[in-house]
Amino acid sequence: MQASIDAVFNPSAQLLLLGFYFTLLICLSAYGAHRCYLLYLYTRYRARGTPPGGAPEDLPYVTVQLPIYNELYVVERLIDAAARLDYPAERLEIQVLDDSTDETRQVAARAVARWSARGITIRRLPRVVRAGYKAGALAAGLRCARGDAIAIFDADFLPPRDFLRRAIPALGQPRVGMVQARWGHVNRDYSWLTRVQALLLDAHFVLEHGARHRAGCFFNFNGTAGVWRRQAIEDAGGWQDDTLTEDLDLSYRAQLAGWRFVFLPELVAPAEVPVEMTAFKLQQQRWATGSIQTCLKVLPDVLRSSIRRRLKLEALFHLTANLNYPLLLLAAVLMVPALFVRAPGGAPSFLAFDLPLFCAAALSMVNFYAVSQRAVRRDWLSQLKWVPLAIAVGFGLSVNNTRAVLGALRGGRPGFRRTAKYGVVDRSDEWRAKRYRQTRAGQPFVELGLGLYFAVAAIGALAAGLFAAVPVLCIFMCGFLYVGGVSLVQQRRAGAGLSVYSLLHMTRPRTS
Image 1 (cartoon, rainbow, N blue to C red):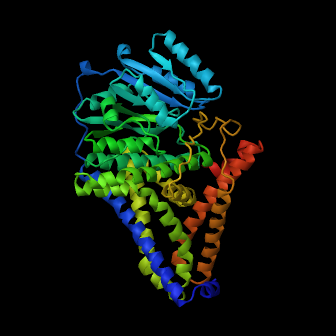
Image 2: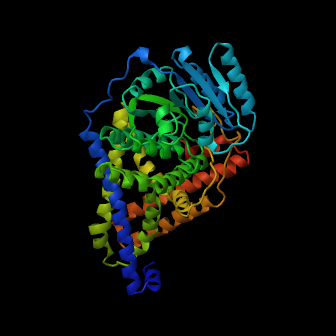
Image 3: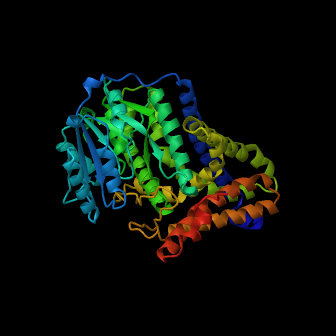
């Protein structure tokens, strides 16, 4: 391998390669330092709690919006949960914003009729043209909504009965425009993939939202499991469909208009996380695309605003966070030639520069996940065994999310592709024969190719005596092989109708 590297890179090219590689590492280190800063904010402002809410007699009229599109397996469950919300019936209405084109329409209509016959104020509002996707549906529903407060739940959520009773008082504080609950996970233990997603989401809500809320920084509505003050939506310019993350976009516009947001970590709304790797990747791609679109749209306004500099800097890191993925992918690919152009003196150099940066990033992530799990689970120590897989999956997603980031930077406007939901709660539920399956034909092969690239690099590092680099190369290898391999196996075997049990060793944790 050393001879191959020397043949490709002359001394000048080697110097340029190393300069670019270390520049990438420095940029990634800045985002790693920001993660540590969030941990600091979370701890520093721990004493700040949620301010008391208004009195019960001040309960506003609430409109609950349920945006759905072809949700055959979960729509009835969602409508039932919304209809059972504990809130004065004379101050509550439910809108089923139904853009569906399949049997979901009939299922939703029957559920709406059933609850309407029981005295619940509930309406199904179908649209002939699905203009603006979810943002368009929410805007259309808002035009005919009666509520001063707007609660929103996506199709995969199961809001607890007391959700509004606990969220609305916080909305009663002056200039509070939105209250966000924490997401729960009804199928956390379904597979390795669902455990990893639960870990990632817990860290996002507990630490990212928790730190930003406690420190008075901007944070965002997550598209569901939250309640808006209607006036805040209107003051911010309403729902707009020019990004794929209409929730993030509206959140920043509302906070720039002077509205405050509240995060309630103790209020949990359970939801179904994707059980299919391709669905998970499409969800991540949509979020990455939309966040960069929103960054390009609102970051200039944030930087020109009169808010404090530390809030601007925090917003900069928040809105550009997905730039990590192309930086990470480039750094990972270049790590191999950058390692070998320094051989035989590469080992001391790697130990002095590369390894400390990788270890610092890994330790900050472990600490990030550990703190969040400690906040939400009594058995938090047992959850730490999933952290290496979560880190590897993050690496494995870099191809998927780099495509999304580059597409957004080029000004692309991809259509809204919603995450497929199958009503999967426990291991007895089968999803592979259900509809809404999604495929990504060529991407798994790219991911598998990168996994093999790092496998060969690990073998070469062993042969060259670069032992310290082997664990880093192996975690890249595992991440790409897992993400690409599970994607390919699920797509091909499920499509051919093979047994569910053939995938257990790849997608489910072993049990005794």
